[in-house]
Image (cartoon, rainbow, N blue to C red):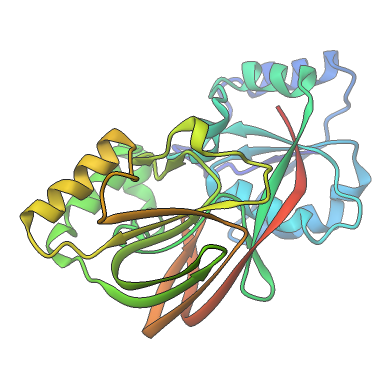
Length: 291
C-alpha cells in the first residue's frame, strides 16, 4: 500500500514517483496507490486498508507520517511501515538519515530490515510519532501558511519563528517523570523520540534510541536575563543540554504535565489541543519500520 499526500512539501511528489514504483515492482511488490484528500485522510485510509497489505509505504511529510502511525495503532496486525519523505521539515527523515530521492528511499525500503519504533500515547486516545510539545515555536509548523511553505520551503518556518521572538511566554508547570518531579516556569517542553525537532533543535545521535521504551524529555526554563538566553542558545547550537541549568533533559517512560492554566500543545507539528493536565506514555516497539 503506497499512501501519498499530494500536498506535502511543495507538492512535487511526482518527481521520482515512477522510479520508486519500478523499484517496488522489481522488489516483488504489487503497489496499490492511495492519495490523501485532506486532514485525517491518511489516518482513516490506514485504519481501513492497511491490514490488507504486506507493507505500507507513506510518501509525505511529518504530519502525514504521524497520521499513518496513529492509524496503525488502531490495526490489529499492522504491516511494517516504510517512509519516503516529501514534506518541509522531515524531522524523522533526518533522524533516520533517509534520502529525499523517492527511488533511493524505495531501495532502502525494499532491501531494508524491520526496525522497532516506539510510539507516544498522548492523553487517552491520541498518539504521536516523534514529538509532543508546548511553548516557544511549537505552533509554527501548523500556523505557517501553506502557500508560504510551498514557495519558501523550510525558510517559511524560520520567517514565522522570527516574527514571534518578542512574544515568548512561559508556562508554570509541574512535570512528573520516572526520575521524580521537575517544577518551574518553562518557555518550551517536549517529549521526543527523534534527533531533530522542526529542523532547528537537534539532539545528539547517541542520546536517542528509538526503540528503548524511553522518551527524551526536554524542558527549557524561562530566561531571566541575557546570560540565561545565551546559555539556551549555546545548548541548542552545541546539542549539549547537560551543562546548562536552563535546559533540562531526562529519559523517561512516562510524563505527566500539570499547568497553572490551559496550555496549547502540538503533536508532530500539528495542533494537539489545549490541556491543563496531560499524561504521556511510551508504547514500546509499537510499530515496525522498514529501514
